[in-house]
Length: 274
Image 1 (cartoon, rainbow, N blue to C red):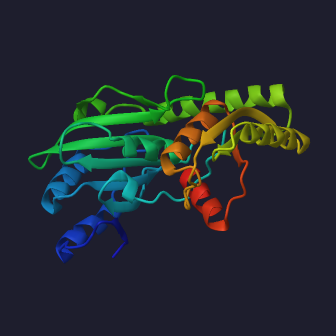
Image 2 (tube, rainbow, N blue to C red):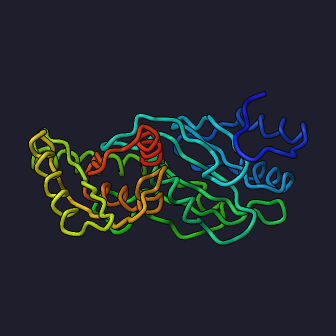
């Protein structure tokens, strides 16, 4: 039986078997989902009483199946980079109306997913479908959400064309940056003020000079007031997500912190920001 991720406690063997069978499903690479998959997901989600999440690759193959929220399904490292997306898309069910949650959209943004889709389930049947895509850097907001529609309205949406258009824009902006900055790596600099005031500002200026000396291009400096450091994320997960968003829209590929990170912090920050 294939591995099922997430909140599987209390599920029957028969339910786990049905979840495992989802790995056999295929979706045409240019489509978000098929009518058959929508029906199966809705019925199974109603049966287990929990949301179900599928991670698909660009060939439309199901590579991971999870139970619970979208954030509970780990996304493997793809070939993501400043010129392209991860090559994965996430389709999950919602047992109540309301559209995307903030954690849903964070999964889209932090993992550079090709697409995020949420299928609402009503009485064991597929109902409204919500779709979201990343916005290109410099656009307004981190994501673009399409109007919610009954799921069958989006059956003919050309997903491949949407993804190709976005990656073409990412590549175009990357070429523009290379012409403007040369080979230097664009970096967002993060200083932490624990109450030092002017000293923290001076340290951030020094960090900018060190970055330039090393051949980097400081595109923006951010000073975070944090009297007590977060032992896991240094500045806290919420602030870290804000910094990731700033870096994305400034076309910065690196976050550089003015304080030395512990090995555990470096690992968790890398995991959280991709």
